[in-house]
Amino acid sequence: MATNTKAYLVGGPRDGSSRDAGDQALLEIEIDGMIHRYIRTTKQHDGGTVYNYDGMVAPGGGEPGVEDPAARVASPKADAEGQ
Picture 1 (cartoon, rainbow, N blue to C red):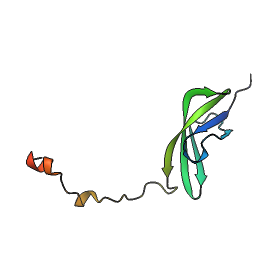
Picture 2 (cartoon, rainbow, N blue to C red):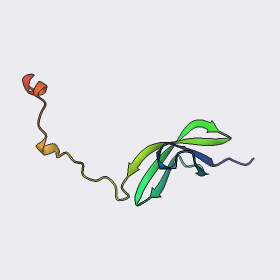
Picture 3 (tube, rainbow, N blue to C red):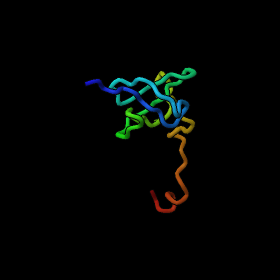
Picture 4 (cartoon, rainbow, N blue to C red):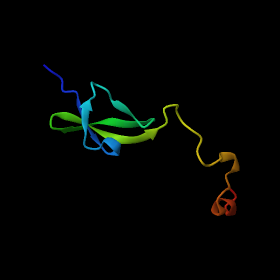
């Protein structure tokens, strides 16, 4: 019995396209130097599996954010409650 390995991509830069996914639960596609992730769902479309867009990451892993946790200012409400 042949296994259908077709993935239908939903959301993100490849929305509406399809590709061979094998039995992967996570598809990572490199586009313009960034990695775009699609996660397998339990839904089916035309005999293939639907993969939902999960976001974009840098190929080297996480990068520093815009907020420095050491310089974070507590909220006025937290200050008023003594937290």
